[in-house]
Image (cartoon, rainbow, N blue to C red; front, side):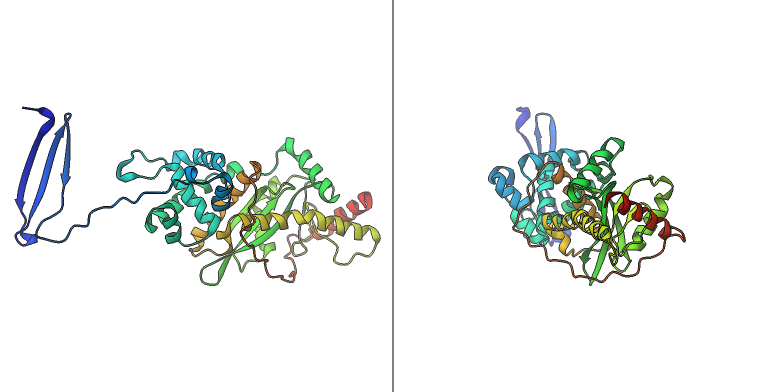
Length: 360
């Protein structure tokens, strides 16, 4: 008897199929037992599983085409795949499971285009439900890396950061610029995200949890209350006029009354352009941030994933494609900033006047 050619065929009657029967084939090959259930006869029709040939973007596209479709090149995509591999690696390749690189490509395609899951699936060669599951898995894996890629400059980097800001706009003793941006989601709602960036357009701090109805100063105040004991002294941040004037948070003069104050406002405007460009680059690189058809919790995870990807792209000098239009945000008149403490407005004016007196 040949051990590798034993076939056992079993015919079993099934009353539920009105006299039909199942065909089971048990194959003993190389001492391994495999059980395969084939289609049912005489009952419900069996739809045979069809495996569609999936696209291989890393092999099919050039570097420029990868930038246009996924916002990253071949080496950058492999670098991102290595970062999330511990969380996305499948144990086996059963049922033609997706590789980590394919999962990352599906996620990047959605972030770069912001289109429907069906369109992303047709481009890659997977089903819409698969795209939904993969996008969620990838964004959770990327969002978990936010503390690794988003952080304030350390003691060694502070002097270099201040020098870059001074070169940018002649504003002394500056380690960051801050602003809030709205990410619109379904149902005429939005998420108000607070971003702090440096002169290289790298995001050094972010707050992604507040609805669009919350004022910018309220978001800063809640963040300030939590971090007040660890707030370093001598760190100046450039802010918009809608924020309060604090000793470590410098806003421009509403009406410059002296030439020195006018020069200060000019330097403040040049320095603050960094956060405006950062917001524009972030939404230009990831078009999904212009409008998200997801619930608020899912939108926050997508925003965090895009922030991590933005810092990766900036540090790896990934070029920004110009095929995505970033609509300008509507201009809003600044509201009266919310007060932090009773004496902080006075101490903030003292610090700002000292900066004008010594540097302008």
